Length: 94
Image (cartoon, rainbow, N blue to C red):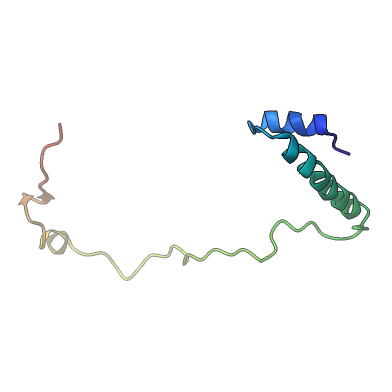
């Protein structure tokens, strides 16, 4: 059971400034949440596999397989705005 003092400490840890009205309002609400967790603790889970994800996860990417082939160096350089010898020419970086 959470007391008003516990709620003040939780608010301090969370860097929340709670008024007296808020402390009165939230103390029973937090206790209600904790009571619900206590009910869940009583559920018999013997023989139930842990569920880490509700839905099965699968990789949405295709397998990395080699394709038909690669393009030639001439084809790669054919649309280059500037080229020098057999390379792309780019501005100097400082």
